[in-house]
Every structure is written in C-alpha cells, then in structure tokens.
Length: 593
Image 1 (cartoon, rainbow, N blue to C red):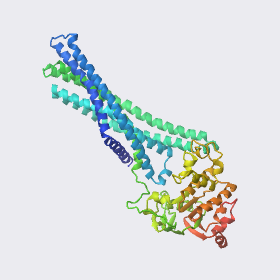
Image 2 (cartoon, one colour; image 1 turned 135 degrees about the horizontal axis):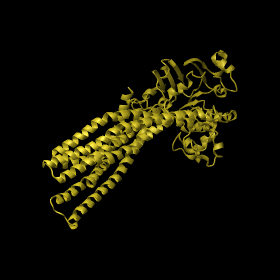
Image 3 (cartoon, rainbow, N blue to C red; image 1 turned 30 degrees about the vertical axis):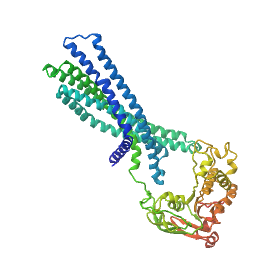
Image 4 (cartoon, one colour; image 1 turned 60 degrees about the vertical axis):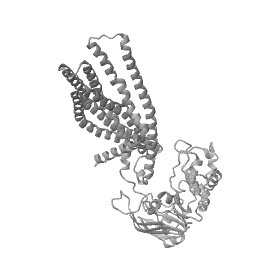
C-alpha cells in the first residue's frame, strides 16, 4: 500500500514537471537540445576530423602544417560554436526554470489553501514548508540534469550510431547491445536504492518537522527546562536521518558503482575488439577504428555517469513527491460543483439533526441529531465542561470540518452547498489564541477588510483598546509584529484580533474565549467595544468569564455533545441545574472545567 502510494506521488510529481516543460516548450525545447548539439560539435565531430588526418598518414601522405591548418581551424571553429550553443542553452534554461518554479510555488500554496483545517492540525508546519519549497526548487535540479546530463548525452549517442552505421552495422548492434545489457544489470539495483532514498527523505521530513515544532514551542521548552530532552529527540532524529542517508550512499558505492565500473571497462574493450576484428577482415579502415573506439569511450563514459545522473533525478523527484503525496487524498471539505451564491441577510443560524464525529474518535459521535437555532441578532453563549462540543460547533459553522449528516443553515441556506470563501466572509471570528502575521500592525488589522482607510483602522483599534499600546510602539501602526517582529502579549494579540473582526463588519460573529488573555481591567475596557460590535449581529460566544456570559440573550449548556439546558442567566440559575452548579463553583470570574 505504501509502495503504491509512493509510486502515485512520483507519477504526480513527474506530471507537474512535464506540464511546466510543455508550458514553456519554446524555451525548454531548445534548452534541452542545444547542449546535445554542442557536445556533438565539441566531442563527436573532432574524432572525425582527426580520423581524416590519420587516414592521410595511413595512405603514406604526410601533410604539411599548411595542409593541417584547415583541419585545425575547423576543429577550433566547431568547438567555439559548440560552446556558444551551450551558453545559449544556459540562458534559455534559466528562463525556463525560473518560470516553471514560480508556477510550482504558486500551485503549492493553492493546493495547501484547498486543504481542510484538519490537514494542518495533523501536519507539522515546518515539514509542510520544506515539502512545498522542495516541490518548486527541485524543478531546477530536474531541468539541469535533463539538459546537462541526459539529452546532452542521448543526442550525441544517436549521432554516433548514425556515423558508426555508416562504417558497419555491427558496430551499432554491439553498442546498443552493451547499453541494454548495462541497463538490465543496473535497473534492479537502482530500484532497490530508490526505496532507501524514499526512507531517507521521510526521515528528513521528520527531523525538519521536529525542529520547527521545538522552535515554535521554545518558551515551553525553557520554562520546563527540557532543553536536554529536546536535544536528545533531535539527536535521535538526526542519527536516524544520517543512518538512512549512509545506507543509501553505501548501497550506491558498494553495489551500483561496483557493478558499473567493470561495465565501463568491458564496454571499451568490446568496442575496441569489434573494431579491430572488422578492420582485420577489411570491413573498416583505420579511420573507422579510431572513430569507433573514440565513440565507445565517450558512450561508456555516459554509462559511468548514469548512476550519478539517476541519483540526481531520483533525489529531485523523490523530494518533489514528498509534496505531491499530500495531494493524493482529496481535502475532506470541498465546494460542491454547483455551489450556490451565498447571500446572508439576517444572520439566522440553524443546526438541524446534526450528527458529527471526529475521524480519530473510534466511532463515537460527539453530536447525534443536534438541533440548535439562533435567531437573527441573538447573542448566544455556549458553556460547559471541556470536551462538550462548544468549539466544535463554531468549527462546523465555519466549515473547517463537515458534518456526517443533517444540515447547518444560515438564513435558510445550507452551508454545505455554498462556497467556503463566501461563507467565511460572512462570519467574524476571534479565536482564543489568535496568530498574527509577520507584517505591520496596520496590515494585520486590515486583514479584516483590505482597502480600509487609515482612520477606520485607528477607529476599530480604539474600540478594541489596542490604540493605547500601539501608539507607544516604535513605529506605531507600521510596527512589524509576528515571528520576527515586536512580540506582543497574549492580551495585546487578542485586542488586535478583535479590532480585525470589528473591521470585517460581518453579520455573524463568533468569539471563542476572545478575552481569555485579558486581565480584568482590560476586559472591562473592551466590553463596551465588544457589545457595540455585537449590536445588530448574531453572536455566538464561548467564554468562561461570567461578566460576558450573564448578559447574553441565551445561554446554551453543552455536556458531551448534548444540549442539557438553555435560557437566560437568571432562568438557568432558577432551574438550579448544571449551569447553576457551574456558577456555584465559579472562581475569580471563570467557570471551572
């Protein structure tokens, strides 16, 4: 099964690269052909010139320097033309590669955009980055190898075959037979090595993913003083990667090259023996013997390089296949072909007989026939112990995951039949732990609505009480934040995320513990802004802080995927049920898990 998957991934990588060649055929064609023509002029025509001179000596004619000048001039001229063809090929190839790589890089991101959220939750960011970059970068390696090692060798071989056929068909038969013989011997060895290379690349991705994971969680590593533990994990990954690398290298050196080395000598010897035998019975002259031996030596040199050529192609394709393997499985969340034009008007949200289970839940459903209706402009809080399904409801509403059965409707429109982009454009979402791009604060806020005026950005920042700390930063709204910029606290990031949602101005608002990282004083300041943001909108709020929950129009209590209670804060306290117990166990304004 795994082998079949690897083969599919390799074929898919080859398909993508071939598409790039076809797209730039007017550049790629000459770039692949000209090096071969250059090699003919530089290495396969000169033996013919020298053979002509030798033929004169063999006939008892001793040419003078003056007689040799035309031959020397022709030799030098053809060599220069061959060099010129190579330089032209380099110029064309550089343009072919850069254009193809650009398209592949763009395609890689488009493919990743098409993946569902679960895909990113189950893959290391560092590993995905390495695979996506390798998918584009390896096109350069493939094209270089094809132009400078493959076609530059194959085209001269056909030329050599044509010349040798003119001397004696037996020379061509011998040459082709030796090439087939070498291929039959080398092919099984090379296939075995490919398996080793696949394991090596997989180990490389594991190591890269672990490095990215450790770096992303460096604060946790240091706070728990676990540098030695992480160093040990990395050392084991590095040892595994290098062990698999060494196995692949040793197999190449001790198996493949040990077989190809005698073949190199054998080919030259057979070529010379056949040429001398044909000369002895008068079938060919000394001129043909010299040319035949020269060509056999050149072509056996190609056989000697064949392993290196294959290694380069194999390494590039295997690396690219690490990315295309991700494309074999279709995304779990897709737009249907006849997706309707989604037009939210009021913000009425309905969950009708919704059944859902996580793929790794061993058949246990989180929701079974869940029904929940949220009226236009209603503010609803979802509360309950962890694992009850609060965040899952918001994920399903955003269609980060698809339900197993039932319907989720917005204004009567089934979200499964709408375009994902249109659906999410109608929902303002503030997660518990918002991430910021490595861009300016202004760009991060404008992510809610590109094209927003500067005064609009400042207005929502003030509403989210982010303006106060932004103006104290070195460059204000133009300060770079994110991974390599100014580091913001969790509360500051949440304020930026809230400002971003305010700027988006969507009819439906989802707040997943959007103020959890704020201190009590900051939360009080931002509450007015949040309530203003929720005005005239349907709002779904997940929060443990009762200062937010108790003001909601309705509170829905979830336990193990079921709605066990719902009503206003006052009504639920009077029921003296699950919510009342949560309220009774509150501590510091939070609901206990």
